[in-house]
Image 1 (cartoon, one colour):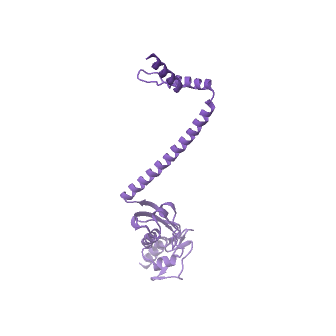
Image 2 (tube, rainbow, N blue to C red; image 1 turned 45 degrees about the horizontal axis):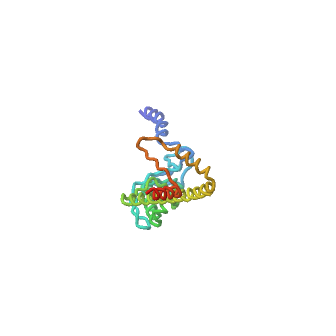
Image 3 (cartoon, rainbow, N blue to C red; image 1 turned 120 degrees about the vertical axis):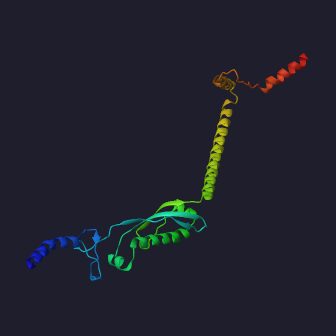
Length: 231
């Protein structure tokens, strides 16, 4: 009977060792406990240990939260946090539910940082958040509907003002070109007549189109005086 027990123990020992031991990869660190106490007070490096903890860069999505900017504009912020564990021993021994703690810390940090800046700063700048995190990236900023309408109206007004400025500059350029053309045609009746005929040819012939011929004032004065003599 004793021999059978010893035989089973010898056969099961490798299976028990394989089940208990765990290989720690190069990017991982492990905290070893013995009877509920951490051994040596520091994390173990790569090799074969009892349990492991990843030291890679970890990303953590934060839930959407309401934030008030420095100029009293309510926002809804959705962010993602990137962090890695610098001290695995402290992470395991001093923090309960580390990912949740990091998420709460990120939300609090975002509220503090965004609350110290205006809406324009938040939209145009990339806020640097340090603390114990590598970085925090804003995934989405949700503005109130009324504020979105106001910003859209402001954008439309700015575009209209820009269009008016462009149109005014165009009119100035056209007026300068007309003045230059008038000075060119001045004293050159042949060129003026050719330009007049060219303008007539460029008009589209249509049954409903009306063509108005400009008559010089000298001709109209002669016509009026001749009509007066005939009368």
